[in-house]
Amino acid sequence: MSRDAAFYEFLLRMGDNTLILGHRVSEWCGHAPVLEEDIALANTALDLIGQTQMWLGLAAEVQGEGKTADDLAFLRDAWDFRNLLLVEMPNGDFGQTLMRQFLFDAWHVLQLRALTGSADERVAAIAAKAVKEATYHLERSAETVVGLGDGTEESHARMQAALDYLYPYVGEMFLSDTVDAALVEAGIAPDPASLRADYDDTLARVLGEATLTLPEARRARGGGRDGKMHTEHLGHLLTTMQWMQRAYPGATW
Image: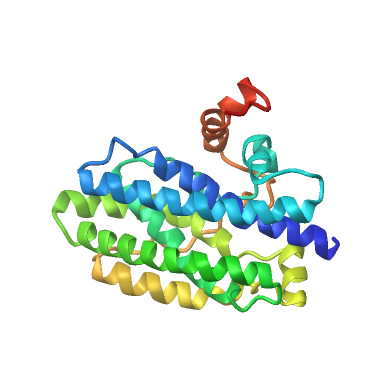
């Protein structure tokens, strides 16, 4: 794989993660348990979509086919997406949504911090802006996980169930392939495996405060970041997210 091809794949991975998670979180708008959470989740979704605009905008530029970030978001099929399986998981209840957010945020902050030192100035600039938002996202999701995990018997049980369900998807964040190898060699992005120790430390600290127990280690569920095996949930999400451009191709207003 050429360096340019690997770079494009990397940008899709970053942009698709924030796009799909941003859409998932936006599904809570008007449905959150309290008004404050409704507003907070909507703001989180807006942050993630804003980051998507930067990552996919750069991806379209690198691709060199005259496409835009919108084209990449709305006109690709499920097998062309490169997001982590974790972010396409259904919202479930409020606890599951915040557990998914925390598991992603803990990785996202580490990834973005590393990318601020990227040899590619465009990547470093996007990361420098996005890491400020991601740091706040992590603070908020971690506080909520602790509050619900160490809350009532009901909230604790729901948070433990959410962790048990979602944790098998965490391992995909740290898998490496030829794309990662090319980017590490070029100094553009870190080796995914190099982030694992700090990630585990964050989880141990927060989940300890939340009185939650990590499930026994199991084989990482992957296939999202290389597009080889998404879940059925992504197809349903894209049907909703892309319907306007699919129904009215090229529509402007």
